[in-house]
Image 1 (tube, rainbow, N blue to C red):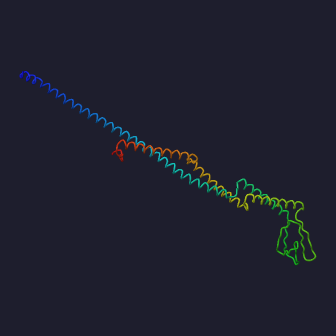
Image 2: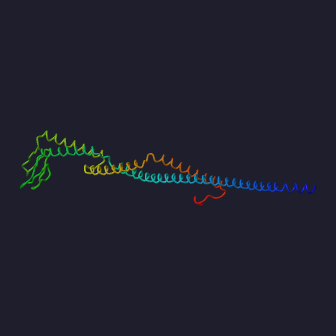
Length: 274
């Protein structure tokens, strides 16, 4: 029996060795599989982190773009504000001047020309008196009139020479003289009223003010063109949209940074190369 048991044991030795070898191989395979699984999970985690970092970088770039757009619009808004202040000053300067327009000045010039023509017509009808020499005392309408003086008379006047001579001088043709005088008075009155209504003392000042108004109007037009080129009307809406977009981008970036920091369990790298 001992011999039989010994023989049986010896016969089982190769199988035991084979079993141990298979067990060792299985353990080795299991260890390798576990290592492979861990490596796989590690690789997946690294890939996930890399993807999140890329998304974070894209969000960061988007935030930079939105901030740049906002800064550009804010700069434009500052330019618009400055131009609008200038426009207000220019408009105030224009409003402070009498409202002289080219047609108003032209009408004033025509009225002045008619007034001058009426004056010339009256002077043409009037009589001119000049005392060349006299031994006697001469009075014109009771006032002394000395030798060497000259005077234009547009109304009937009395000329007294010495104590024995009195002359009645009637310029022009009577009725025509009266009409000419009345026409000049009417045109002079109309001219004065027109100056008063325009708020200027004379024709020369009116012309000077019109030049100033035209210069300021040109400045206003140029300022308005610059405001239009900057899109001043649309700018408030654009600025509000840009501010909202920049705030949203900043909030999205903060959210992604917080989530990624929590996922990594450490602070984010300063750069993508870290």
